[in-house]
Length: 322
Image (cartoon, rainbow, N blue to C red; front, side, top):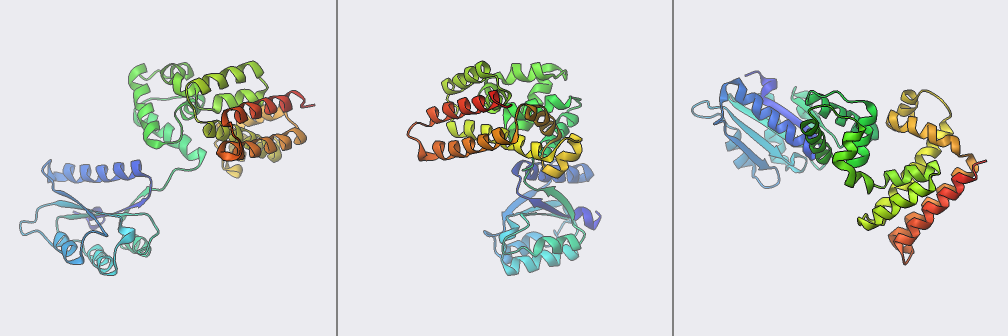
């Protein structure tokens, strides 16, 4: 076994990606001849002594392959760190060491040391940017052998939310239920309940000036029990996006997406929405959502009423755009 295949650094904090990385490493070792009986031991760096770790990482008497997964390595003690670095320089025969590290912590220096030792790095950083979520969903569909349009990817994210585990499950379920023929109608059909109460539909209708549609969607959301904070966040997100895109001026959505840290589909949608606004009404709408944020977090005695009033105010501002 090549040394680089014996040493792996799983770097980041995104749990789903970490699980997948570890699973792929174990599957690779098994496929390499270790078989299904491959021993896999998981240890937390803070719960195991240096002596116990040394025993685990020492060469096997019978040279049997095994995988050692060291979790929470960022919190490892000085002795454990020294031992891992020693093993990294010359991995024992048959031992595959998988180090899970956040990139910070008291053992922060361990991650770059393992990279210097030519560990195979698995990037599992938190997915926080909209563009990264778009890439993730597109990648999920691609892995399932399904090609979807950009607006379908956007619809899935708006309907399901930002949790990667839920997004992955939704992609898998949609691919299975539709036979791979996925359009926006299919997303709405299978996730209509969640999409209706996500808050994004209400926000889009409000900033577009669709009073009847926005108020009907808001009442459905209230009946289904969507928390006012989520509604407030969705409305604030739409208004802030319009403000940012509007101030950036016209331009290619893909170029602006990189400058603004937004997904291209979101920039394109905001460019269409901003035509109904001007700097004065956008400024006023920003004040409305700022007040709403405080209201739903305790400043108002009735958070549901505060949300309804804010939606009404945004609709009113949109109606006097000129």
